[in-house]
Structure formats: structure tokens, C-alpha cells
Length: 178
Image (cartoon, rainbow, N blue to C red; front, side, top):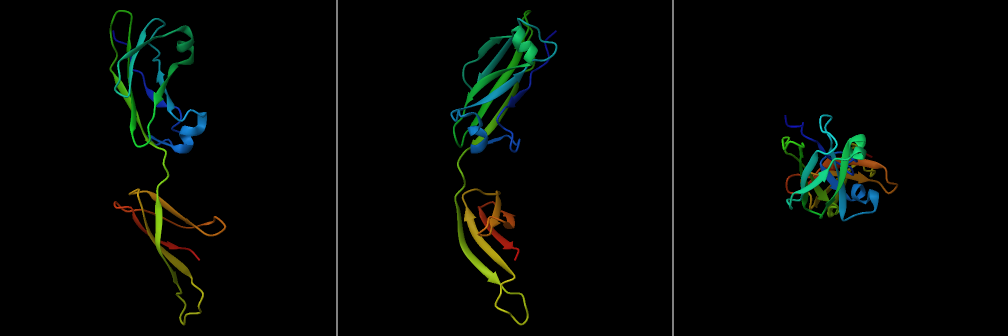
């Protein structure tokens, strides 16, 4: 009988855990060229069984499960990362009789470059009637090189005064609080 399949998790994908590796996450261990993937060892796999895995579509590698691996419940492998690319891992467990689990895969999108944002126009809006010369809100228009991304507008003290999302072309228009 083939062993159960393992699972693959990316250790640094934590804030948020979203399948994307940002700069802060990737910098958490001071190795910016790699991230760590955990390949779980299913409970029905035993010492001496083999984890066969690939990294980024490369050659299949083998790791024989040790007592320490079984106790830890996983093995960790280094996965090279490149900004703007997807890094991937495949894995399966092969028992000593040659039965192989289902192959599983995991991937993470690497985005370690901050988006470029340009503010095109800031329009103060005075809603008082008659106008008193003090704007009650503002409208901030601009664009970013990241479509469908969150935008946060802050005041000079860093307080959030407006939020929104870029459209599918990276444009945004956000109405701010007073």
C-alpha cells in the first residue's frame, strides 16, 4: 500500500499567509536568495522511506527519512526565489517496497519589490454651504504599477485617512476623511 501524500508549506509565508512572499517575509531569516519549504512526513511513512522532490522544475532529488525527520514530522528544503517569479516544489513519499504516494505540489509567488505609486491630483472638497474655506474631505487620484492592489492614504502624522484599491489598470481615486 502506498503511503499517504505529504503536504508542502512555505515557512516564511506568514504575514499574511497568502501564497505570496513579500520583502519583509523573505528577509525574516537573512537569506534573501532562498525561502524554506517544509515537506511533511505522513504518519504512515516510516524511517527508511524516501521523499522524492523537485524544486523549481529541476531534477528529482531524494531524501531518506531518518529518525530525526520522523520525530520532527517534516524535512526542510531551501527553495531559490527570484523577484517576480513563482517558486515551486513537488514531493511524494516512496516506501521501501517501491509504492509511491500521490505527488503533491506547492508554489509561492515572489514579490519583493514595492509598487511604484504616483499621485496625480489632490482635490480639497468643502461641503459646507456656504463654503467656509476649510475642506471637509479630499479626493486623491493617482496610479500604481500594481493593479487590484490596496492603497492607503495617510496624513503628515502617518494616520490613515483613506483606503481603497487600484483598478485593473492600477488607477485609484480615494476620498479621505477630514
